[in-house]
Image (cartoon, rainbow, N blue to C red; front, side, top):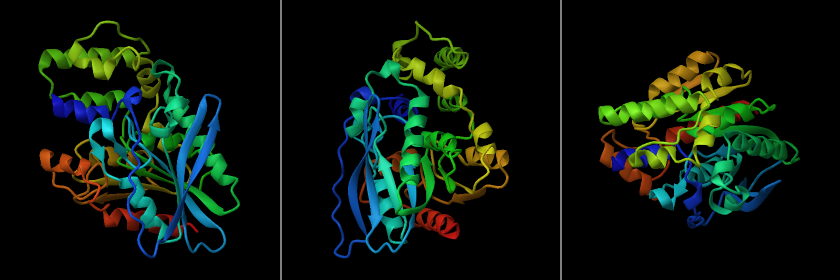
Length: 327
């Protein structure tokens, strides 16, 4: 049950306990990037991010907006609350800088330095995350340094990114994006629960998918269905990635690792089927946090707290090629 709770916590909110711990990796002697803080002002508070610019940028260059997944996952793909320290987004940003690609990664509202932008968990909606992503897109589009804005969304960030990508961006990348509505995805995650508890959980999920909150539930399911998170889940379950990606008429790259124990290749195939014009790449041996890992659960999860492990090289090359070809 502990392992299951860990995995599921990446699908649900955990904002009230989130605190960002920025990893300060040493900058190489010949740094390819310069990082500066960037701020998005919203009516409820500021959203803070890191702009990573290539050192030797000449003229206008492309910029990729990274959108993190669910739970208390910060701009670098870390979360002390969950024992998650991968530096995956930071590593990806630094690698892309070597090819002249700028990136902007940010703490979503309620997370890390952006914690104060979410006044209370019960008021948070999936649409808030979408609005923030769109605002970042518009900010980057107005910056004269950039030739085009690309969205790179990871896990739940893939879904957020699909909506934001309708706002005239140059291209969209889905990393480990779920290929069905979140209620169905969570049911899959819960499929191994004991029969009685699984039936109860499924009934709660069905109620939320129908827009109705649930007052009574087992204490063992509290983390997933606590009253303060149910309004968010109701708003989240309404967004169908197959419908959203089908609407996109821009270049799309779908990337999925074969040893991802949270999101499967079937999810990527669902997205590809919904928009056949998209490019699909499955990366052998890459897991959910974008590192090389075996499929065996314990060894796989060990990579979730190993920031020294480098990001997958093929992932970097695929994104470099995708953005580079569009310039």
